Amino acid sequence: MAFWSNHFCISTRKGQPTRIWAGAFEREVIRPRVLGRFADILKAVEQHPAMLFFLDNHLSIGPNSRVGQRSKRGLNENLAREIMELHTLGVGGGYTQADVTALAKILTGWTYVGQQGRLGKPGTFAFNVETHEPGTIVLLGKSYADNGVEQGEAALADIARRPATAKFIATKMVRHFVADDPSPALVAHLADVFMETDGDLRAMSGALAAADGAWQLPMTKMRSPYEFLIAAGRLMAQIPETPWHHLDGFSVLGQPMWAPAGPNGFADTNSVWATPEGMKLRLDVAAQWAARIGDNRDPREMLDLVAAGAASLETRRTIARAESRQQALALLLMSPEFQRR
Image 1 (tube, helix red, strand yellow):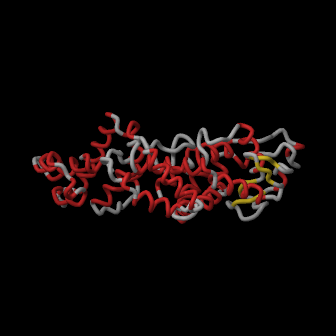
Image 2: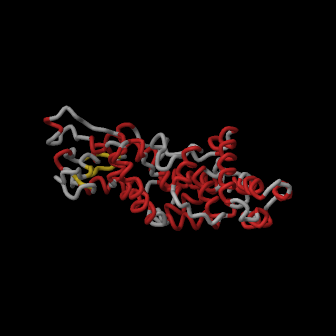
Image 3: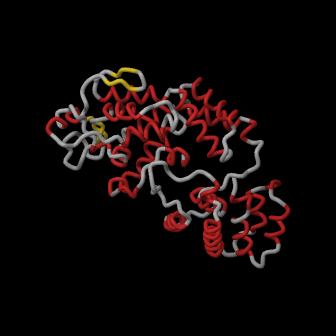
């Protein structure tokens, strides 16, 4: 779920609406669809008020729409550009600036209902015909008739099924779950599964888990701060009395909850997280966790839970030689077996 939440990210840095909607966006849009069809999650994401606000589509006005003809406001291409560049086709995915503009026109009128409730129930998706660019629009070589909200839904459905989208999603999945430098063969295999199953994300996940290439490489991927702290909480069976134990840790380690710096989300490579300063901060957080737990856990038994036979002799010796259980627990949390996945 965290992978898709970061892929289709929004940021609470944008303003109050995203701070209000961020939790619901992840819970109600992302989580129920991570094992469904890619076209379905794409449509749900792009029609959610959080995404429409985050990428300014509520400000996009068709130049020839009824509002556009009497207003100085015009197109805002942010949503259209990020759909193509970050959500579907990817850079080099075969689209042009003209296609970005065309999709922006198609998506005019996609907005959310404000507090006054003029277009429906406040805080829900709405299609405003008054701001929608009229007429047939050509996108990626195909004409889309002006039939209201269905024009945009048809365009997204077609983009979701393009081979470039399959390759882009497959590449990101392999990079996230296997290695920073995705295996071309494994990417091609997942892309084929995507195309053969009409973007079935459950089938893609199963194919990745079953692929020999996903298990042959050593565990080199660094856990992100989110993954590190969640894994620590699970290992120690800790349900925090207050969420700030986790939320403060996310921020300290550089991954504040639902607040990436831009629409491309948080980084997914070791070079960002495995820095000297980043590791020092992780050690500080690990020491704080160990101090809170005290002497109530045996770190040697916990290492077996974490790695079992995969634990190195060096890690076992380091933990066994610790001066206290608290120190041993901090060392366990900082061990390669725990930091990598």
